[in-house]
Length: 165
Length: 165
DNA sequence: CAGATATTGTTGCCTAGGCTACAATAGGCA
DNA sequence: TGCCTATTGTAGCCTAGGCAACAATATCTG
Figure 1 (spheres, chains in turn red, brown, cyan, yellow):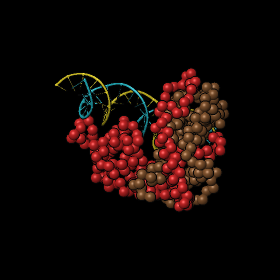
Figure 2 (cartoon, helix red, strand yellow; figure 1 turned 30 degrees about the vertical axis):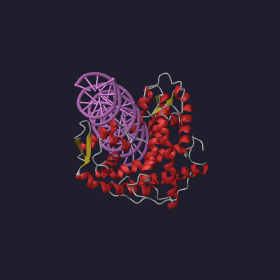
Figure 3 (cartoon, each protein chain N blue to C red; figure 1 turned 90 degrees about the horizontal axis):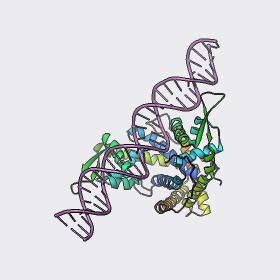
Figure 4 (cartoon, rainbow over the protein chains, first blue to last red; figure 1 turned 120 degrees about the horizontal axis):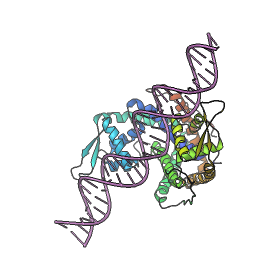
């Protein structure tokens, strides 16, 4: 399997991710939420009263990103920020009635989308796929944690005029 | 497998995608490119002189997004736009010398990242994983193609038994 | 040929994520 | 108690993608 092959696993995996995101986003738009917002919804549904930092951790996303997401969702009346009595820095997050009501519908679409995507696989194959993906995920998590120091060191002569990124 | 389970395949897949992106981005930053820019690099390396629309198609990305990507990469001296003699609307894209020089290095990192991620899997398991992912991808592609029209209604996916490439 | 139609790239406005710096606040410790 | 450090959320500046509208060209059709 050459990296220049279009069947290269690296390509395929990112394609799968992109496609599932695209399809789900499109199916869910009619409810007035994006996929990212739905993820917030599903986390807060299970853990109402979480702080913004806790939410960011759950989503494994930057605190700032989470904060801006909350801004948008607050504007759309999906979530509420309430101050914490004990710690005046933290803001606790709660879903609105409307958001809780939509939750089940979103889950149905999410499940169906994944089911549809896996439709060509037999039950055994699905189980295998899920298991393999889970192991790859664990590996990646350890890599993400460890790489900070410099596992794959790259003594790269940067092209002279590269824009800093 | 309940959707509220953290092992839910929907979560796992998006986690895998996110993590691989994160790890790769971090490893590649030392070269002065982002992951998205590296994708452009690899496409143009194989197909120099492509138009922007062709590039957008290759990346399966919006024309506007591709255009802005080219803006950034041109500013960083990775890519050149040249007018087409026959059609004054199109701009043909060419990598700079530096970009071509960096190409191999990027591939090495990409391969190594994927290899590292799949390290816990045996050769057989890797082959299985790749094959399953490829079939899921094909299914998603047919869904993405078919879903377009109706936003509200969710058309049934084709239960195709596509041959893995 | 002229007029309608399609394609190409750009721009504006949106969501979304990352990194850094910062003010407000908590908490630890001398 | 008072200082120093850590944490929390926010704001600024970046990359990146999506959709819609638009001008400049090409192309197709009557």
